[in-house]
Image 1 (spheres, helix red, strand yellow):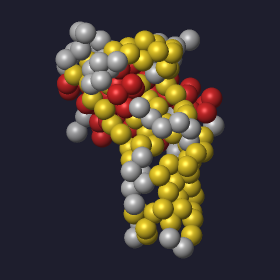
Image 2 (cartoon, rainbow, N blue to C red):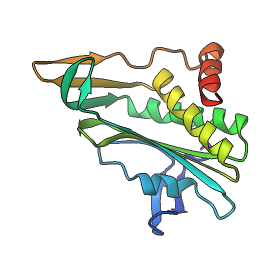
Image 3 (spheres, helix red, strand yellow):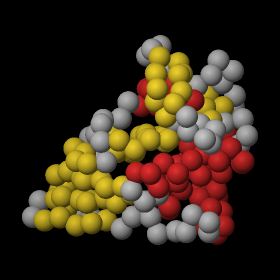
Length: 177
């Protein structure tokens, strides 16, 4: 099993509670618990935890969005998240990463993705977190079905080859600028 993919016990820095048997890389139909995701990567030696929470908004492309449905090939999505975690660890070795993504119907205002990166230094945590969402959008096998007033449409998902160094370099550039 790759580092970070095993179930973990971690301390939530916000709630103070403990998370049990939750994987760092996960796809679920259940609502996301951002505090628990952050708790998976947080250690006493960390000086920073950066989180990204992607929310369903009420509009897109000039349309009133009612809800989104997400579909994923979960086993491959988790492997993709593990790959992203490995890439981030190679770039920022002192940083730990967790990525959780929803599937199924997600209402306006609910979280569709939660990413946490912890590090002794804030710059690495911010950069790894930003890198992770850029790579999720590029390579994760997750598809979004948007339902809006008067219709519905599938939104194009990941299009980059996970082994494409140019795509990885573009994500790294966005993360570090």
